[in-house]
Image (cartoon, rainbow, N blue to C red):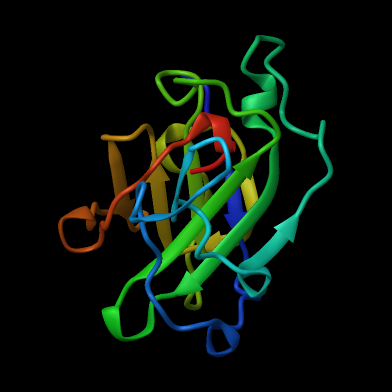
Length: 171
């Protein structure tokens, strides 16, 4: 299975992040343009303060198939939800093709939040990371997901949701 790995190092400064929830999904309508197209909140409640990494295009791990541009991460965001107790992530891709997540793209966010951890990648993905991790957020598609430690699944108490939008190139 084709995988995508995104490693988030411990260098995130949680106290500097904005503290309010993110809408997952379409959200409420926020306006209509002159052509009558309704615009929704989706992805618009993120700010420049949430950006952690911007990456140049065309540096993805290539499998030489039509989904390579869908695996090309160009930006990564995160936000502490504050009082709601959640932590939110967003990934923007160069050109996310419709349904790429169905067997051609998995997203992993590896979080180093304590001493120790593991350098091995989750789900038997080949390779290692230079930043040992303690928590993995694994997004396989719009339905299948997991939040896990290196030894156990903690999804039941730790998952809010995922929203894929190919025409907006984000999840």
